[in-house]
Amino acid sequence: MSAGDTLKSLESHRLVPVVVVDDAEQGSRLAEALVAGGLPVAEITLRTAGGLEAIRAVAREHPDVVVGAGTVVAADQVDAVVDAGARYVVSPGLSRAVVERAQHHGVPVLPGVATPTEIMTALDLGVETVKLFPASVVGGPAALKAFAAPFGNLRFVPTGGVSAANLPDYLALKPVLAVGGSWMVAKNLVDAGDWAEITRLTAEAVALVEEN
Image 1 (cartoon, helix red, strand yellow):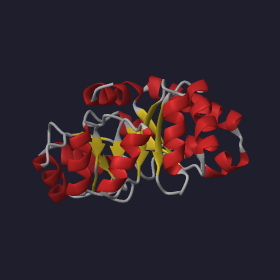
Image 2: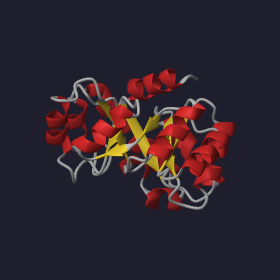
Image 3: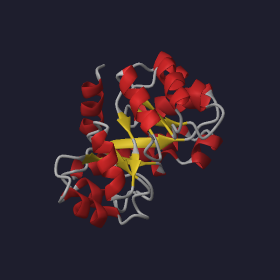
């Protein structure tokens, strides 16, 4: 899948589950639950020691899932997640080293931005889709509307503080490519192995996306 095709896939689903898992088995089971709920997309973060192996497991065992790596903060991590099979890279902030390494590998990179200066730096680096983070803290939908005026061609993936309640507010905005959220893959559900509840919440989220 090319970089452009990966972004088109994220845009078609419009919702990116932001996942925290402890090991490969949790990653694989979670991927199954997401697919069962109608959402074959996952951003598996590197917040845990097992995140990388979870990405590897999902890429190997569930090739139909568009798996990406989140919380990527260094260039060597980009090398590791791409080797593991990540199809896109997400960072909480804007790092030239991370962006350029992802571009070197030919995978989409969604750097986190919160200010016009960071957006302009991202544009200078050739990035056309960014992660607004933490979205709820920096102004939510109102901030997106403000940024859309001077940066009309930029696409956003707002993440942070997104819920089923405010998801429609984000999806209604033209600059939004997709929205990142974790309510359907909450860590307590993952730790409990409540895959059925994750599937149920995912199906609800997919239905909400289809309504908007």
